[in-house]
Image (cartoon, rainbow, N blue to C red; front, side):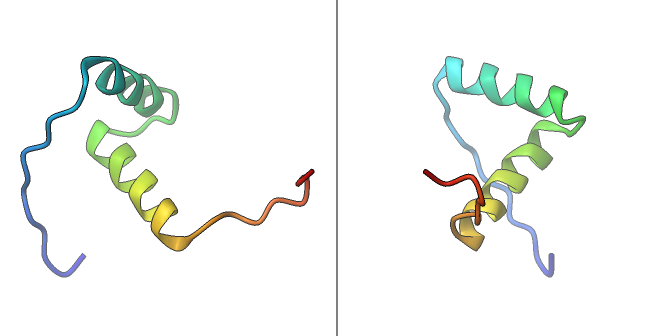
Length: 52
């Protein structure tokens, strides 16, 4: 990243708890998990050979 910006983000408690659990399962910090998910979504839909 060239430049980082701090933000305050309000999340519903259940979404926060889910993100914390996902971060732990993926061995990432909460911040890294959120960044990973945002960057993945920004790249567009993943190609999946198992599409229906």
